[in-house]
Length: 548
Image (cartoon, rainbow, N blue to C red; front, side, top):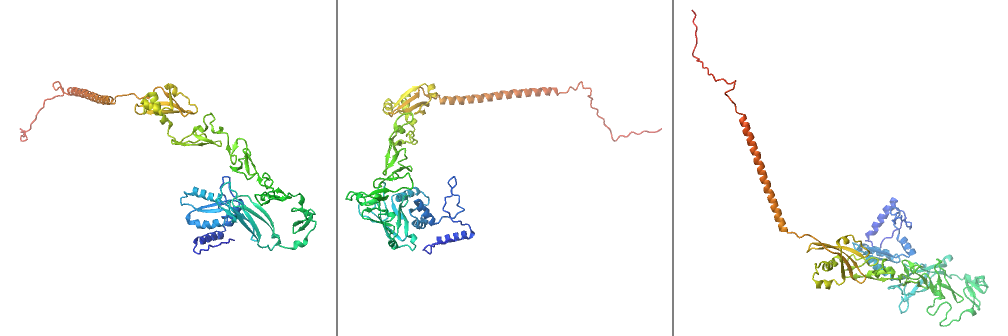
């Protein structure tokens, strides 16, 4: 069964949408109440998103409170009011407006964290039968005021809270007359435990036990409290009043003149001597005459007290650093050898300072240096380009500083020596050296040099003895010669084609003449030849034969 509380604003449509949505899921039988457990797989992803319902506000509040978590809701402006109301119900939470493109998320978290980390607010789990009032001056010189919250607290500030506990009413059930109250700062996993017993009845007075064993037979047990004889004092009448140290202005039983709290609030005053509380963690010890010291409230570095036992130990709330370490949390290494490259050289390559054994690289007009030893400069201008002009003027008397005065004035920190061309090609670089190849656009030359930046700030350069230059050629002559050659070859080809065509035509003509002679007939000796004979008939002539 689910209980929903509507908003006070009847026009708030989001409430009804939420009710409709949850009602639908409830009717469908799809909602399984959240069990408050952390269901994560090996990759850190939540595995029950489609199995369990979202946790309720009360469940979130309990988890945040039990684990001393500070929650920051970074939401857009349109839902800010909703999450602000949610934040009011969760201790140690805050709410801030996030831009639509989330561009201010880093600054938002930073600012909200500063507010949280600079604020100390006390809380308790007392019931309504007990009223606890908080008073504090928040580290100021003025009087204490009724408050359980102090803002603008900086690291190292000491804030004192005074508690007044008052019983408002007695529970109806006598079993509730004893209450354990836990008081702690919000967001800090440390607390003060008060075992409160309420004197809500007078029946116990009639049950006075004289010479009770709980009072070491030196007093009467009345309502669970020992009323000691005149010669004895203490919670169990265990101390002789004559043996107690004398009270004076500067000498109190269990506290000094800086406070009125016995045993610094972390122990029990017994016979004028503090018996310090025992911590749940046996490694955490409260000590000192007034229980003012401990070995667990020192500065931490990387979640380790005094950076770990190899760096220092916590003594009376302050780190006692071992040899070679310093700092509030013994995080600073005094030796500077870790800032020097393994092969030797300057600290941080001369481009930074060694702080706590770590190089803090510097920024120069050329760029920002980085790397473990500040040996890298990704944003610096190319060193090869910077040395090219000096190598040209010192080796080849050319380039930007080819004038002798310019070369001497601009290249004082560059020392150039020569190497044979073959030697520089086979040269194997050692640590700190770099090979560069440069081009002289004016003389059309290429040259190679090797440089190394020395500790004194100078550059030691080795350049090839002779640059590799292009041969100087007459472009116009080459062009004219090429054009003439192409023209000559064309004419020669044309003449050759003409000659071959003429010879071919002559051969074809001669063959034609020869075939023509062979085709003529000789009629005088042709046996088949006959003279032409013409026969004429007279159609009008008729031959008649007479008979005798």
